[in-house]
Length: 314
Image 1 (cartoon, rainbow, N blue to C red):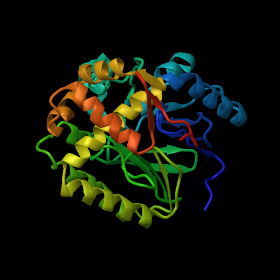
Image 2: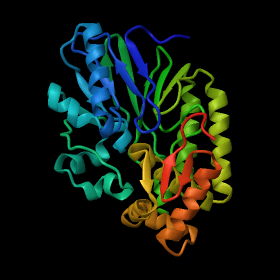
Image 3: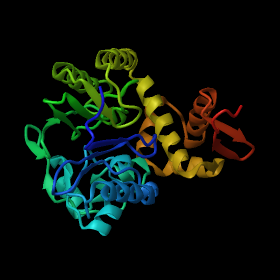
């Protein structure tokens, strides 16, 4: 199965979420998720290239599946250039409108996002038309309570954000706050996986990693991972700590040890995870996280520096 010619899927990596451009409409394309703020120049270039190819002057709208920094970090730059409206899930609309950063995820995770102005709420249960496609908006709690996924039933296309990847799913952020209790949020992950299974998409366009057509295999992988975390929820806390530190290093490429410790100390979610994992201080927590990333072959420790391991580097 191939994507229709008016839909572009751009696989971007891990610092920036994948971007989907939904074209085929005289009003201009919809840009689904805009990457991380430090990749804004790349995002602008990708959108400009698509507009030129399709003969449009500006996007119709920017659409965010959820407000994590890797999905909405390019909103500000795109909105500044094109004066384009932003569509987003309703739960955090007011916080984004007033830019209450303490109510958004950026301060809690120690990440960055330029301010933007939301314009329209994408409510679960609603739908919108783009070209000859009718996209359904569905709630997909688990990774994020407010997250949505988009489904086009005629084509069998699912934009799954971080609810389902080919090899798993995104960090379960409510678990990082142990709300309402450690392990409780995994039920929502399971419910979302069940819902995706019922949709039975022919092709999935995930938030990270390649697009895929073997949805059954991806769901088996995701359920296996969910069972692993459920059997011992502290595993997910440690996984979350490592993943968020790795994300920090993806932005900076390398950091002195003392900067890593200072970032962990200043990042609220890392302090909660440190307490859950029983690490007595940020220095110990830094050592545990870096050791885990080093054993996985993702980082190198060179004297006072922690840096990303280059592809093929030993």
